[in-house]
Amino acid sequence: MVLAKEVMGNIISDKKKEITIDMITKEVASYFSVKVSDLRSAKRVKSIMLPRQIAIFLSRKLTSNSLVSIGEKFGGKDHATIIHSIKKIEEETKAKKDLKETVDKIEVRVKST
Image 1 (cartoon, one colour):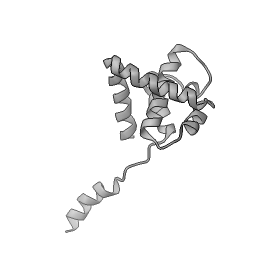
Image 2 (cartoon, one colour):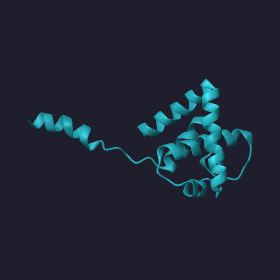
Image 3 (cartoon, rainbow, N blue to C red):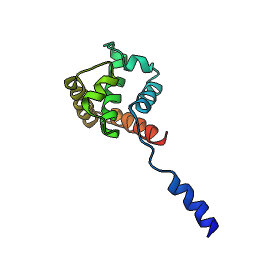
Image 4 (tube, rainbow, N blue to C red):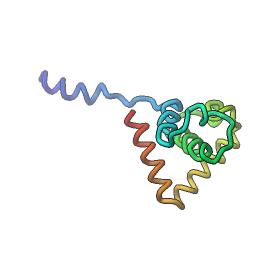
């Protein structure tokens, strides 16, 4: 019985960790070799825009945060910008297999953090 508790205890105690926007931005920044601060900035540089859009997409998918609160975490963007980012990544992942694989890899990394 003690052994069973030890084994099951590890499984049971590994409660689902709550995924946060901060966790997502760190993983996306790490994956694309950009700064977290750049993802949250107002910069519109192409090298930052795609990672930011992926981070926004995953923030909506993996958290229960509202569009407004996601926007606040990404430099005060309004909900229309957040919706645009989400839709863009949804469409692009359907059209581009390599992008879908990238988003999926990042999602796995976030969930395993």
